[in-house]
Length: 586
Image 1 (cartoon, rainbow, N blue to C red):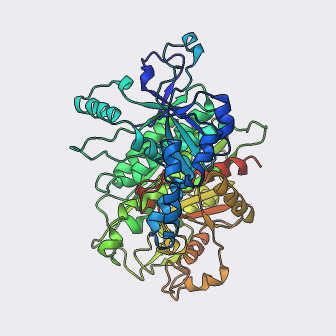
Image 2 (image 1 turned 135 degrees about the vertical axis):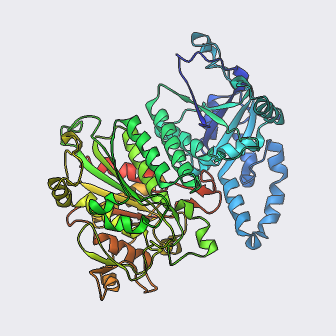
Image 3 (image 1 turned 30 degrees about the vertical axis):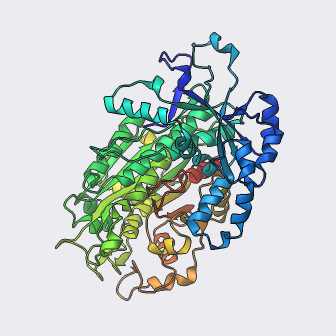
C-alpha cells in the first residue's frame, strides 16, 4: 500500500478531522523558537513545552519513550549510572541507544486549530487533538526521518490499532477511521521532500504471497498534491519500493518470460519501444555470450532493448542537444552457479541476482518521472543460470559480440558474460550499424535512435562476493573510466545519502585475465581483488572514449534498518539520478 496519501482541493473524499495526526518536527536547537510560535503546545501530562522542558530533558535525550518533563528528570540519574556499563553493551544495544539519542517522538495535546479551515473543504485543514512532537538531532538526515514511522506506530493508541484491525477484518474502506499523519511544522521544500521519501521507504512491506496473515497497514502521510516536490518524493519512494518487490519476487514467478512481460508493460505505459531478442535469435544476431549463459534453462534467454526519446524533444531547456544515456542491468532470474554449482547457503538468496536489472529499471523510471531531457536506452540481458546437459562448462571458449574470444574460467561468474555482450552493444555503434546493414536487426524508427553513440553508459550488477567483502552489503562498489564521473558520484552519494565507494581500475591486475587459449579469461583463480578484476573484464567490452560507470552491489538488506527493511534493496539509484541530470546538462 502506498504510504503517502494526497489530498487536494478537488478531492471529494471525506476525511474525518479526528483521523489526522499532526507532526511537529524540528531539531533540538529549534525547539525554543517553535515553542514561541506555538505557545499552547503541551505534552500528554499537560506540561508546557518551552525552554524549561528542553532543559529538563537534559542528559536524558536518549530516552525515546519519555512522555513528560517530570519523567525525564526522574530517569536522569539512572541514565548516568548505566553509562558506566556501556562499554560492555552489545552492538545492537549500541545501535538502539544511538538511534534513541537521535530521535525523540513525544505525544502532545492541544495542537492549534486552523481557523481558516472553513474556507476549504470542511475537514482537510483541521488539526486534530492528537499530535506528536518529533525532535531530531539532524533534521536533514534521511534515515533518521525513516525511523519515525516505526516510532509513531509504537506509540499510537491501542484504540487506533484496534480500529485498523477491525477495518482489515471486515474489509471495509473506512479511511476516516485510520490515522493519517501530516507535517505541520514549517520545513523548507528540500527537507519536506526528504521526510516524505524517508516515510515511503520506511513503510514498505512485501506481503504479496501471504494468504492467511493479516496485512500490515502502513502509517500514511498526507502530502500536498499541488506541490511538485512532495509528489516527486512520493513517486520516487514508490518506484524504489516497486524495484524492491521485483527483487523479492521468487524465481518461479519472475521467470525470464515474466520479466519480459513486465518490461513490455513499462514500454506500453511510457510510450517506449521494446525490441526483445530471444533464444537462438541471440546467436543469429551476434549475442553469443548471453546465449551461452542462458541456453541451459527451461525458458530461453533474451535481451530486452527498451528505448525512449527525450520527452521534451531533441533539445534541453537551455537549447543544447539532448544527451544519450544507456543503462545496462544484469538480469539473472536465478543463479544456481551452473556446473560450478553453489552450495546451499550461497544459493539461498539467488532470486536476487536480477537486482541489477531491477535497479536499471528504477533509474530509467526515475529519470522518466522527472522528465529529464535525455535520450534513454535500457539494455537488460535476462536469463536463468541453470544446470543441464546444454550448460556451458569451465574452459569452454565462446566468441563475444565484440569479436574477442572468451574462455570460461568459472560458470558461476556468468553475470560478466551477459554484461560483456550488452556493454559492447551499448557503447560500440559500429556493430549495430553492421547488423542493420545485414538485415540482422529489425528497423527502428529513426527518431528512436537520435544518437548511436551514448554520452554515458551505466551498468548495475550483483556481480561479485568480493565487493561485499570489501564494503559490506550496504555500500556498492563504483568503478569508472572517468575521473570526473567518480568525483560527481561521490558528491551525489553524500548529498542523497545513497552510499557507494569508488574503487580504482588497477590496470596492473589485468594480466590475471590472460588466457593461454583465448583472447581473455572470464574469471581468474587469483584469490585477490575479485571485484576489480571483474570490472577490468567488463572494461574490455566498453568502447574506448565512452564514459562508463559500473556498480557492483548486493541488492539485498541483510537485516532491517530504518527505511531499509530486510530483503531486496535498490541501491545507488537515487545518487545516479542526480548524477545523470547534472552530467547531461554539462
